[in-house]
Image (cartoon, rainbow, N blue to C red; front, side):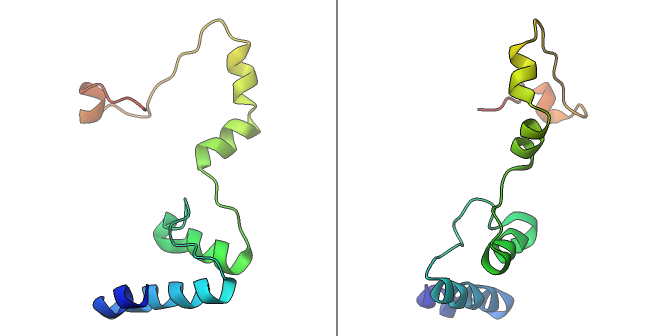
Length: 95
């Protein structure tokens, strides 16, 4: 970790340096956790200093709306994107 920090320059070195200090302090390296890079690193900060659990936004909304139950009890489900763009025209799909 430290070797990588020394190869970086400027702000990158400071951010990596902070991550190394936090990993040592918490005895846990949060940098590669899902959501750590969310919102420009806000996810990392919230996990490191507030004990937050970062979850995907869709998962939170789906749970709140009980989406799985609603879909399971439906005969037909129609979905759509918020807008049409180049990805829509090329058959964008979720894996």
